Image (cartoon, rainbow, N blue to C red; front, side, top):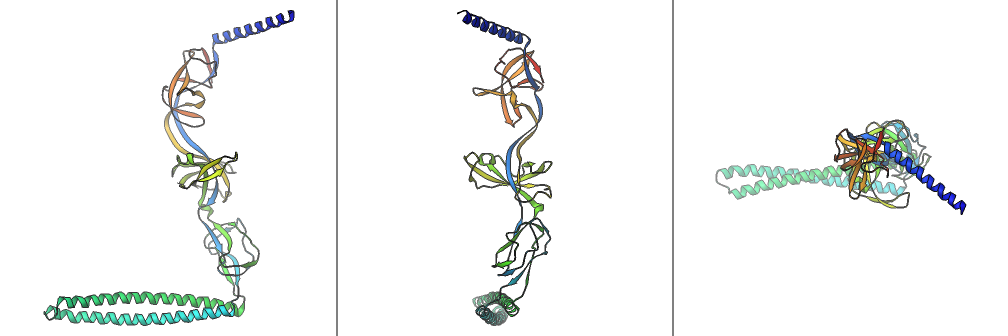
Amino acid sequence: MKTSSKWAIAVVAVVAVVSVLVLMARGRGIDVTVERVQRDTLSVSIAVEGRTQARESYTVTAPVSGRLNRLRVEEGDAIVAGQLLARLVPAPEDPRTLAALRAEVERAEAQLRGAQAQLREAGLQRTQAEREVERRRPLFEMGGLSREALEQAELAAVVAGERLEAAQASAAAAEGTLAGARARLVGAESGAATGTTELQVRAPVSGRVVDVPDPSERVVQAGTPLLVLADTEGLEVVLDVLSEDAVRIQASQPLLVTRWGGEGTLSGRVRTVTMAGYTKVSTLGVEEQRVDVVADIDHPPAALGTGYRVSGHVVVWRGDDVMVIPTSAVFRLATEWRVFVVEEGRARERAVDIGRRNERRVEIREGLVEDETVILFPSEAIEDGVRVRPSG
């Protein structure tokens, strides 16, 4: 019993000492960190991640089937328009293919002869129709011919002119068909004769090689992709954004890329927000609706290529003269936002109307005036009217 009594006395003593210390602290005030209300620039941004890609890319394919020599370029090489990329020996044609191509040429020649005959006939008919109009017009003026007869002659001349134009178009089409058939036949015959006719595959544009599926010598079919060229001067970023954030993003809003593997921040602007969303599973296993946002980088560094991962933020709003305080000063009570203001050494609770905010500062629309002092990170010990000792 004596031991229990001693413990009880000790507890009472500790509580008494703590109470005295609290009362002493309240007497001289609770230490708090404060900051003044000021007008400043406030920007609101959305954190984004994405990947780079070339604004314009070109897939170079095999023009014909045949044996492809080993490619002369590698990934990362800078290419100028017209530069030799590969050499390809077309596969020789079999006799049946050659016979079919020769028959195609003969058919095209016959079609051209028929089109030219129709063209000559249409020309003669138009000339005859125009002469008929010239003969009938004086008779009509002298009253020896009805207006209806003259109009019929004029209509016949117009129709003859339309037929001539149609015949000219048919003849031009026949000439093109014949030229194509002859070109195919010449290539097949030369390949069959020598077996070594070589085609040079050249770069269609200047750029950088970003993908070479297979650089080895091999047999390829017509249309097989050989390599991909990209214009890295026009680098863009495809951002993967939550759909609820994407509705706040608009074209021409600034993009700041803060993490891209190099030093400094890259600037750019949003070009477009795609209208088709898609479902993506997050790292936590949650299904999210995502939208692609495409932005241009103003001055992409040479070290930044296509398919690189980048992150940063899109500035969706900016105010240049806004009354702001740190977000750590505001707290929610029921349906109102409130702050503690320091007035004559005491904390005074006050309701405020807040506007836009970011992770550090919040806009104050009503409830505070410039140069007032607010308490940051108010603890449960801070109550309306309690004495405080500001610092910071």
